[in-house]
Image 1 (cartoon, rainbow, N blue to C red):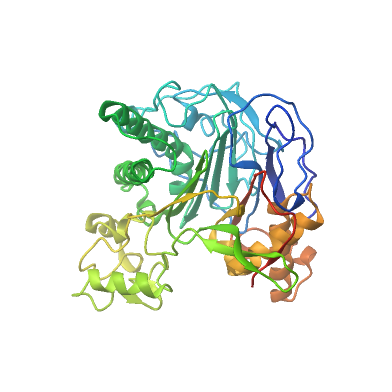
Image 2 (spheres, rainbow, N blue to C red):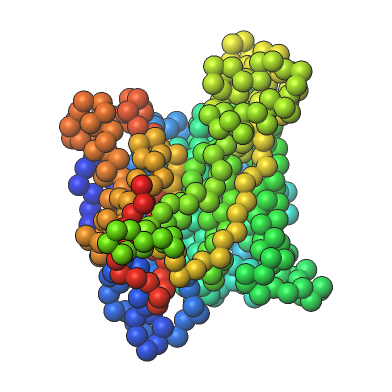
Length: 484
């Protein structure tokens, strides 16, 4: 069921962007963990889903410049312009060009500072001359993994963060993508415009191949899960290749493009299988009940991080990077890869991957002694998790959230909020708490902090995007304590 309008933001650029509540199976409502109240909706037969509702919110801190005319202007300054007001999803027909519909709209307001949603169904997708688009055309709705006659779509921007959420309740799947751009918005814009479609293409190939081999494709089977994870990895490799090819075409006029990159976090919930793929430092957290009980006899809720943190602060990542470059003692300098970047895996950042792109940056902007590129990897961390009756909710967020909250603390905040406000919006609540903490750390009131313009406010917090997915089950306990 499409959500109704959510309350307007109360503070500056803090804004709830979208919310979605599922319909229920014929015969009664679906129980949701911890008393999260989903009002009675239209009763119709739907395929079983693992989620009952979800919401997204974002907060910008960075000021973004107009981006390149990459791909003949397809990803120009008009990126996501029509997604800046509505507060609910919009139902649209599924089509091979869906991955581009949410960005290919008429030119309009640019420099969006808040995550926003809805899709203009009146806009027509533009064609791109790049061969890469022809090669990754999405499968038809009858043959694709993400198949549906209609889907619900939301997306938007917060500073250099970009986000997508695509849902087919009747087919039991949800796609969430957060693209945390850096050194510019171009890579994140590119991912927002293409990655969903590319993933759909490769997942469609899995189903075709499965039918040829009569492979067991039941959800939850190890072979099936591995095939899906392999497809997600191939889609990222495709996106990387296409983006760097476009940068190479543009870098003579805009050499700064070789430094632009983006972290990637995709969460795909298909039936009861939850897949995550990430590059960089965004995180997906699963809140689940442990088998132990607290002193009051309630189950303990704990946080499980489903993704890896790809930064030089992670000892495993740093040591691996140093092993891969034994002849370069300056692989990590000043806590950054080649003294330039904290993340060790990302899309883009061509100057840390190819000598010719580094050469495009003259003087002090380039990297001296690029001994053995590439220094930034595009090998993602992949995870498949089978949703169980003990799983409560999932937090998907860019790293700005975790500058202020540890994993367990974020889970505790969401859990306590759901208990206190069962019909409220946990994603918005998390960002409100972040603003309170950021203001306190800076010695400001929240009003003073939010009056600081984007760009200058980056000193106090990063762009932040959060999606909270409430997992539904008929076997939830209504009380739980939170493990810290």
